[in-house]
Length: 232
Image (cartoon, rainbow, N blue to C red; front, side, top):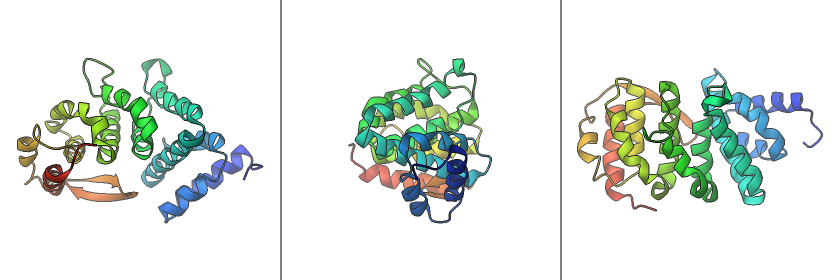
């Protein structure tokens, strides 16, 4: 695949992102030259086709994780590009960047150790807090993805989840409940119990699938997983 043009690569990557088998999609995408395939994947993080956007998040995480294993400085450059996209000075919005950061760090411990604090900073009012509600959803999802794999590296986010549990937006509220389930819940347990009867639903991307989930069901899951999950 080294001789494929950029235009051809973008077309082929889109076809793969639409493939019904997520494992096949990712296995083929990481066969491309890693640094070259990053740009097409960045463009699909902005896709209005929901399934394509989320597949791009998964694929980007796989690509950057693979880079980190063999070309760690190249992986750091991509991570810094996510951060730049979320900076006001970039002139953009940064759609998909916090999700891709979280996915990458869930897959690769080196990137998590170096960049988890940056992702946490986006929910901290005293640091790089993002006020845009749609970006907040991306950050909470990214923290949840990281925390469900490496809770010890995201634990500083716990106290900053509390305001999102009070959000009027059921998606933000549901994402906060899901993310809370990644941690031992001493701090959050009583709050999470309040949502056990909440029957509102939203679409959650996890285990490489988009699911229609109920906030109450997530609350019950979070309470159970928080009881047995060790920090690591």
